[in-house]
Each structure stands twice: as C-alpha cells, then as structure tokens.
Image (cartoon, rainbow, N blue to C red):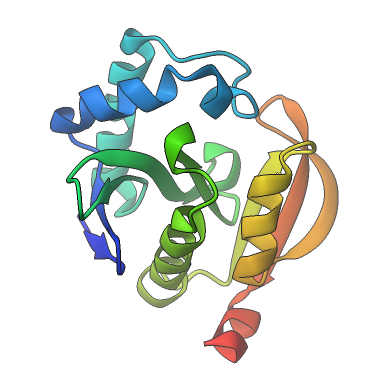
Length: 174
C-alpha cells in the first residue's frame, strides 16, 4: 500500500486507526452535502474503511486519508478508484476535506499527488472526476489539475458534472 507525500500532507491508505478523523470529517453536513446529501454515521464510516482496505488488497489503490504534516490530524480523504466502483470503467480521482481546511489549496495539492500515482504507478490511460453540478469548488480543483469538462452524466445515483484528462494531456503538463 502506497503512502504519498506532498509539501504539507501525508496520504495514507485507510486503516482502522483513521476511524476517528474520518468519522469526524464525514459527519460534517457541509462536507457530505454534495457527496451523499447527509452526514455519514460512525457505522457507515467503519463499513467504508473495511471496504477500502479490501480494495487496496485487490487493486493496489483506493482511498487515502490526508494527514496534515504540521498537526498530524486527518483533514481530508481522496481516492483513485474505478469510476462507479466498477473495474470495467476508467480510473476516477476524488477528494473531500474538513470544512475548516477548505480554500487552502490542500485539495489541489493532494489531487496532484494522486493523479501522478494514477498515471505513473497504476499506468491509467485516462482519469475521470465527477462532482455534483453545484459543487464549484470541486470543479475548480478539477480544472486546476488540467481536466477538461466532458458533460453531465449519471454516476452514483445523481446527474454529475464529469471531467477527464488523458495520460498524454497529463504528460504534456508534467
């Protein structure tokens, strides 16, 4: 399982020890507003951690906890996973942050590291990202990463804005 580092973050694959930090973040209504529309229960967080640990074993990638180096606290989470959680689909990148860490560049910093992992380690041909159509902050991170808007598509039981980047586009930016 791969740990990634950036200037301000350590991205660690989900473990049981991350439960408290992930549960705290996922219980914030504003954090989950565009993801599930409601806060996650502690039981749901435990279930997700178990599922993610299995995906790391099966695929060699999944969700990381974003640990702020200065405080050693979990301030976010992000993933490289199969779009729609289906291995027949291309890779997807995603993220979320604690509300008190919004607008500080952490999502872009983590996204850069995860995209590098997707293209250089996993060897993905393309990388997709989806967000709620009203989630302008997430769309901004996607554009900043170099992704292009593709349109509205149905993913995760909602009509989402879809962004994509090819391996060639990524390499041209690197």
